[in-house]
Length: 247
Image 1: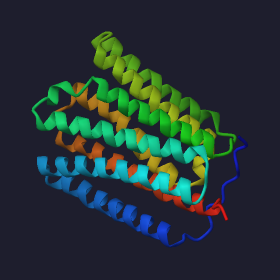
Image 2: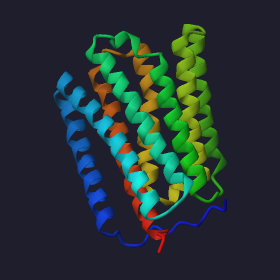
Image 3: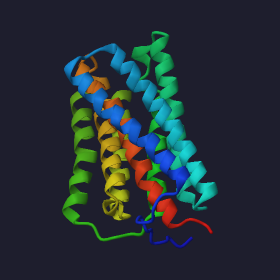
């Protein structure tokens, strides 16, 4: 399929304005919740963050399917919807494990496979949606360095263990998301770029937190970064869909 040149300048119609308002509201909650976690660390805020990750994941999936059937029949929206849905499902299982007292069993495990798969699905969405462009080699080399050197340092430090290997898988998935996204023009869509950076950063940090810094309350910001990142990606995709709407 020929990748179209997207046009993000068309006004949103009423359904998309409603969707946009919902995700802007979620983004506003993310800002308030981030401040609350930093200033008043509490398990309550962690629970709220988990709820919002699940809600945003499934809401993003519904938004992607809605846009696919109403505006633009392109595979990228199905990949994006699949990524959001799979993340929402994986995080639901993660939180259920927390509620039943299995906090020490959530990493590493099958839940991580679901999250990593959701990252690769989002990568495929970008690959199918956006045209290729030239990217500065230094940026790509920097991402590659982080992708492989940090997990390698952890493997050298802790040995070849399931947590260290899962950390490598997370870094490869997030590094691929950033590199493929940049090669396929997401830098021209500030909202999508910002959301992708937040999402990828979250899962660069997550396995390190689970391995070394689990008691640190400030790293609960990871969850806020995730649903804020999802919100920004959805908000960035909305005008794209309008610009390519079917008559």
